[in-house]
Amino acid sequence: IIALLLTFNRTAMIGKIFFYFLYIFCGIYLNKITKFELYLFISLIIISGYFANQYFEIIEMQLTGGQGKFRTFSIRENIWGEYFYFIKENLFFGNNSYKYLIKYKGLVFHAHNSFIQTLATNGIIIFLLYLLILTININRKNFIYIFPILLFAIPQYTIFWGISLEDITFFSLLFNN
View 1 (cartoon, rainbow, N blue to C red):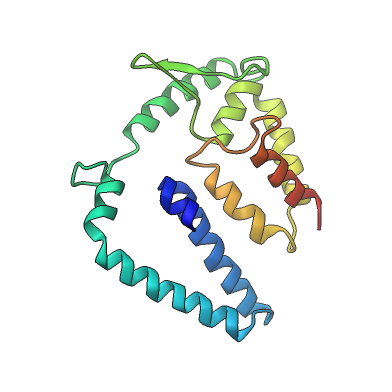
View 2 (cartoon, rainbow, N blue to C red):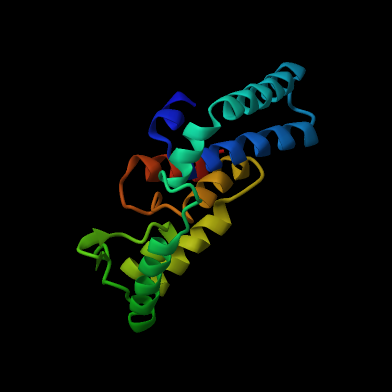
């Protein structure tokens, strides 16, 4: 939690919050959560709400980049548009498994989306093999851990890098019960 606050990675925060809610919901549904865990979770929500109220201006400044209004995904929308054009033109083999990067406003960007990046880099054939591996290996035991990572992979390029800590963690959770 401290690392999330220090880095203020909004996507990671949302993924972690989603994981905790999913964990509690599944625990209640399966009757495998202790009263202590439930009370701890409720206490954390109350404490978080208190601090969010106390430091609202600072949090708002971080979320809005000091602009006073919430930022949109406009840069990502433009980058994703470039990627979709590339994918349309190179559907089957992508960038021949070389990481596809684009230049936008003088900077080099990856897709900020694991699925779009994988499709652009590898093409539809390898991308569908990744999806097949995912669908075959997701089960009731690992869903609670895998789903937040997949959710996090939509606005961030976090999995399918190759050999990264995220990939090792993700595939360990996917293949081990």
